Length: 388
Ligand SMILES: Cc1cc2nc3c(=O)[nH]c(=O)nc-3n(C[C@H](O)[C@H](O)[C@H](O)COP(=O)(O)O)c2cc1C
Image (cartoon, rainbow, N blue to C red; front, side):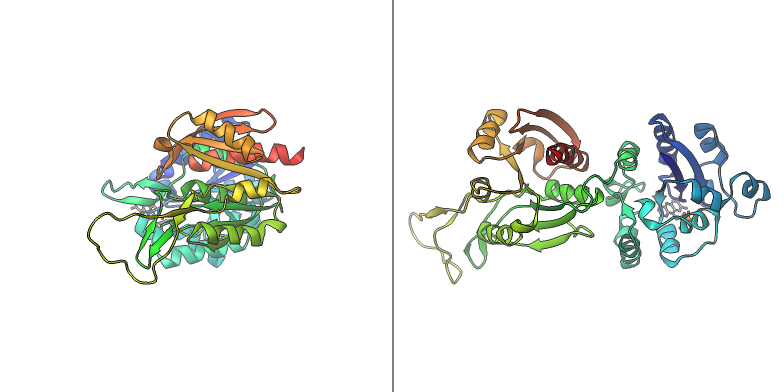
């Protein structure tokens, strides 16, 4: 793979050195271009030493233009990785400004061949300008990876804005769009089962795993519908998002979309029971014992598995004991193709997870890592079975 690595002037520029090294190690041919600001953080010499190739830094340097000018590099590159993509660089790309070597080269490459890895302070990331600019780059076909959530360079700041770790960017570079055009349905988050207008039964699912699955499928070219219970996560770009509250809403929404999809991944933590009655008004305190009557909610996965013809079905099992055995039972009882089993203590609300994936055909994989890395590993397993 011929990779043009474009480095912006953010504090995470030092990680671009590792990224260049890992890309070379993975067998890619790597050329680098640095903005003027990037050169305040890291030197062209570092990238030249890591890649064994001259580095583009100056649009008007005669010797650079002669060796491999910005257009020659653009023609050469199969993919352009922008890491770190600063707020400034993102805005210049949105506007089509070609006022340095990096943007001049990038503008000569179609946006669908850009992989943008933003990195900035979480407040900059939240700014409407950055969000709008990036949204427009996505609309033009650019892929975006991250940012990751965590501690910022200013140690007191935490949030989305960190550069995704270099190994994940390498994985994204090397990954082909192997789900191009495949319609998939992902469910995520908890459900809420109302007791009265102000109270509900729910669970602590954050929705992160389901959202990661939707994002990963989108990046591999799938047409994604994401049905999500209440979460605090930002919407996933370029994904059809359907918000639901209860297990019954979820069942209805799945029913509406099922005929059009080839894969269903049920990562939502769906309530198995709901209160038998929802009070029309807020329930008042009463003296003595109160008994809550529960009824079963629809078993969406089992319903899908029982159909004569159904999409490839992936279930999740969040267990507190006998994780693998319980998951294996669920796999066969609900007639699923794959099941992703995790221990509740490893999963809920965290950025990482540890899972065992079991397949109807006997396949088994133990996976651990960030939820986005796991999501890709799960799609790898789905992809190989779709082909079959
Ligand atoms: C110490 C320091 C750290 C910075 N870190 C970031 C950053 O992480 N992300 C960002 O978007 N801008 C950051 N900036 C601001 C950019 O350097 C500035 O907007 C610059 O114009 C970016 O130019 P470029 O996009 O051409 O590389 C930082 C500035 C300084 C002084």
